[in-house]
Image 1 (tube, rainbow, N blue to C red):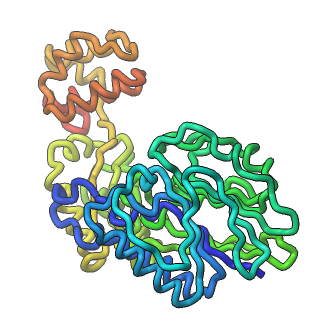
Image 2 (cartoon, one colour):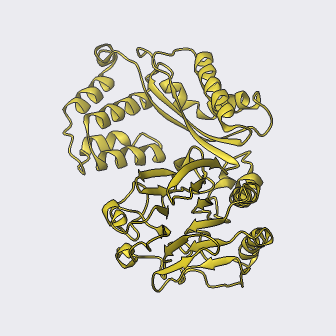
Length: 418
């Protein structure tokens, strides 16, 4: 029986941008999160007494600003060396050979695959062969899989690869290849890196993204960790078990305020959502982005009194315990509730605005001049967001959003207008 851990995208010492902009942000916890998650990986490997560890690229986030990142990694590898656990790793786009300028010698248990050609390495004491190649440069537009050899007969074959496959939203294209390309090699397991959300692409053969060890922002919400793989004596994958490693759990909490007219109820809903998320985080710091949605009479207040709303939500988060929840951002994606016919009769200016919006042509990339003039009354950041949406996909939904924001700016309150 063979047992190994598949991890990827540790991004040790990845900078978390803009933390200083957030009052009360647990900066020390967040900045140290990638190291603590990697330490959890090493401890898991020791506790489970695995046969070896594979890391599918992006061990680092880029060139070291000093030697501390390299020394931290080396110290962790030495811990595994003391336990007789070998490590096999490849370079990804963030730690390509051309990116990392500083070097440190590594313990004898660490095996780094070539960045110039594909290598095949046998795992001592096991009928196991690992095939892999790292990135020599940050940009790798070619399909590296084409140069991987066919499976070695009588062995369990693993492919170690940093790739975007055929593409994933939010990730740049690197070493593109298809699932068919991987299947044709005849390997029993493909240990993939680069995509930061864990994903099982196939179970026959196993084609798996480990995701990153620690989510770094709200786009990387949910559990992050590694896979513990068991291969039986018949050289078939028997089990693939997930293990959490993250120390900060990012979550996007959508709070539906449809029809909610009382602030207390809105805050109660947010508190309930945070409570549930804290429970699921299982003792980790919860880094939450709160998104309010739905058509609600509170729409105007959420925009106008944003600082007060944030303070109220922070107060509710404090009720859950000290340093349990950090609210990273509050996003208002609600819409107002009003009677258009009644508003049109309210005064001449409002009537003109509604009529102009109703007849404005909706064309992507073409913001009507009359709308540009109306947007001039809005704060710069709101105006930019509206213009960006319109210039993107331009739709009836965008027109409704523009109408809602403009009416709010003209003094319309969330209800039926006054």
